[in-house]
Image (cartoon, rainbow over all chains, first blue to last red; front, side, top):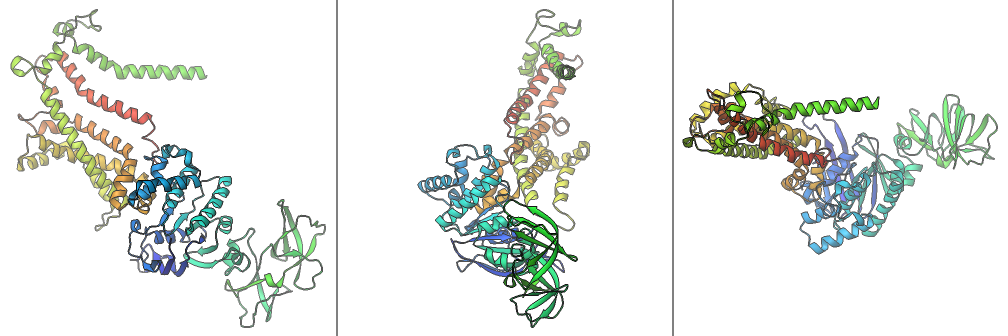
Length: 357
Length: 282
């Protein structure tokens, strides 16, 4: 286990071109020992490149990687003591389940007793004990993925376990259980876990910290709550949460209010230093409520659609050309075509050039 | 409809089997005949149509001094040349194929695919084109009419097959397998022989099978590059033919020439049916 520092790292796959395209733009970050991180972003945003840089499969074009303040940038993968699980199960077909799990220890010349003990312990955690003597190739896809995971967890001293969308092939029920398993493993062994995914629910439920990436850029690092309530860019607001954050083009009105069409919306943000161009207002559909007795921040809208999701209702409404979505309590009955929606000022986020003010 | 389909299917299979097996049965039957039974009238079944004799087989192991043709020595020559050349081709070819599959080579305009094509291109030329260079080459280094010379030539002929099959095979082995091995603590060489190679046994068997077949059946180079010192089986079998064709010993020698290939086929088939050859990695 180690603290991992990524210092001013960037990477391009075509460094010799006159204008190389960067898969990862320069960034610095620290992964604390024993924490769970999720890297979240759409396909092709540089998530896997980042993992491969940490595991040493790729050498970064620029920057340094430090494990516990020791520079490992030049070290090869096999000496880095890192573990990586890929999207599709990679197992050693010719070996038994036991040998698969023992392989990383055998490669590092561990004693036989120690190997036996570790394999038993990991196989119990992952429910693989009864398969230990079976040829690994005879197992199902999700069991094979468990083996890949097990190979990562079998080394106690591993600096971090990197997982690249490891639960893609596993069915939803087991996915849920495995995620919980991983959390337990993290709490028990204090292994640093880094989890790449494009599924926000997976990221939200798994990680202490979420790293959101877009087009080779790290857009926001934070707790799930921060990402949800105060997305730093409109991309994060759009990417995280279902439905995506409501975003409207607005005009500045006063130092702390904006205007959508003719409606004035107060916010808790100081807007005095902003220029009046490319300003957006964002608010989560979870925070948009049907007005009861509020007198400010009201928006009158036409109901377009009401969808009942069982645990909540999703209102889709229109105000002129704008669409506003609101998640409301399913007990609320809406009989009129028109309702007033309330935007709580503390939940309103103002963006200039797509960045949070 | 289904019955008709079944009927047609089985009829076809039976006809095809007869088509494949008949020449063998005919050769087996002929190998036990004598001059009379071959040349007088058509005969089929031993003891009923003709009196079987082992003369056709005996000739093959008798020394020429005692009126035989002795194919034992050419047989072992062939076995030695084929096995040695196949083994070396597989070892070198597999290493070349792994490199071509996993690393990117650049030399001027030459890329990985061009190198692979270069290997295969050795088999595009008709053998006759290669015969003169090979002849001159072997006579220069003094290996004409020798087993080692033949091994060298056969390596040139067989390695493209091994490279071709193994490149394709390695390309289908996900590179994550190598990467996982590195992450688990192997160095690149260990990753290759501890992880990638055991996973590639099916490919190695297929490549080995092709090398053995092509090496074993080659007549052309064995004929051109040997004279008196060394003789390979195909050349010896053809040489059996004289003014009076000895159909009986020809049949017997044909049968024992085919025997190793049939054994190889059965072994490989067994491996195939275990399901180890297909879908090795998924």
